[in-house]
Image (cartoon, rainbow, N blue to C red):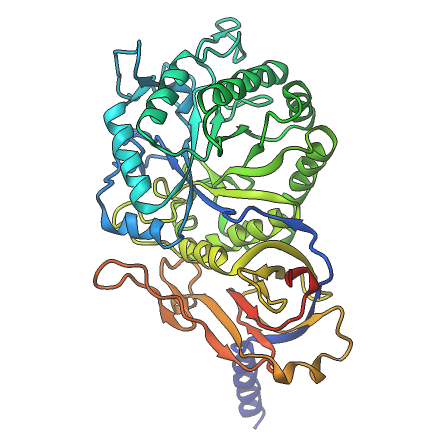
Length: 520
C-alpha cells in the first residue's frame, strides 16, 4: 500500500513538473508623452566586405556573401530587402579602412587576401571597382534600400611607429572625393556617409585620437557640402563607428563641433566571443542583458552635453563578436538579446539600430547558404512594420524575465500603441494586462475597442536553437515564388489578457488605446 502511494505521488509530481507555471502581470504604459523618438527607419542591417577567406574558430562563414562577392541577382535576397520598404543598409564594416576605390588616379585594384602578417583582421588591403559599385547601386535602387556608405578613415595616415596601433596625420580626402563625384555623376542616392570602422578609443588593431578624428569629420563634412551643394537633401555625416569610451567620444564631439556629426555611431558586442559556451545562457539572462543599458545611457548623456545636434546610432551590433555564435546567432534564441536591445536602445533615444549582418558570418539575418530568413529577420520585419518612432514608457512589477516595450503604432490613428513582450523564462507563461496610466477603470472602456492584433513568435518544437520560427503556431517559410510570407496577426478580444508563452516574443497592436502622445 505504501509503495503504491509513493508511486502515485511521484506520478502527480512529474505531471505537475511538466506543466508550465503562469504569472499575472500588469504592464502600465505612460501615454501622455513620449520618452524618446527613433528614426522612421530605425531597423538597419549591415553589408560587410567579409571575403570568402575570412575565418574564425576554424570556420569560414563568409563564403561568397561579402559585398564584393554577393550574388546580387538572388531573388530571395532582393525580396527580403523589399519587404521592409525600405530597409536601411550600412555598407562597409571590418575592412573598410583597408579599402580603396578604383576611380580617378587609383588604377590598381587588389583583392583582399588572407595575410596573418597584417595585424588588422589578418587581411591585406583590397579595392572596390566602379563596375561593382554600379552593380550594387542597381541592386539598391531595385530593392529600395536606404544606403549608408562607410569610407576609409585611414587614407593618408601612417602608423606612429612600427610597434604602435595609433595612426596619425590628417585624413586624405582625394580618393573619397573622386568616389563621391562618380557616385553623383551616376545619380546614385546615398543617405549618409560614415567615416571609419572601430578606430575609436583603443580601437580594434588600429586607433585614431579623438581630436584628430574630430578634425577629419570636419574635412568630410566640408567635402559633402561642396560636392552636394546643389542637392536639397544632402547625405548625413555619421561616425565614428566604434566602441564607446566616454572621454574619447566627448572629445570627438567637442572638436568636430556643432552641425558636423549628424549621427553618433557606436558598436555593441556585449555577449562575448562567438565560441563562448556560455552564450546560450547569456541570451536568456535578464540581469546580463541589463548591463548594456549603462552604455546606452552614457552615450545619450554625451550627446546632450557635447553634441545636441547629433543623434545616437547603434552602427553595428551582432551580439557575439568574431562572426557570431554558431547554433545560437542563427537560431530563435538570438532574438532574446536582439529584440531586447532594439527595445532598450529606443528608450535611450537612439535613432537607428544596425544589425550585423544582413548576410554573412553566423549572425546574418539571412542564411548564408540558402539566403532564407533566419528567425531574427522576422522579428526585425515585425518591428519595422508595427513599432512607430515615438517611444513610450512601459513598466511592470513582475518577473525580470518578462521584458516589455511600447511605442506608438506605425500610422497611429486613435492613440494606437504596439507593445513588445519578450519572455526569457523557459517555464512561466505571463498573463499580461496592458493598461493606460490615464485610465483608472480600463474594463469600462475596452469593450468598444477593435480586436487586438497579436503576433506570437515561438521556436519550432519549443527548441530555442531551432532555425524555424512559428508565427501564431504556423511555420514561417518562403512562398513557392520565393517571396517573404504574409505576417498575419491573430485577432483577440481586447477584454482578454495577452498570454506570453515560455521562450516567446509577442508584438501586440492595441487599437483605440487612447494614448495622447500617439494621437497627433
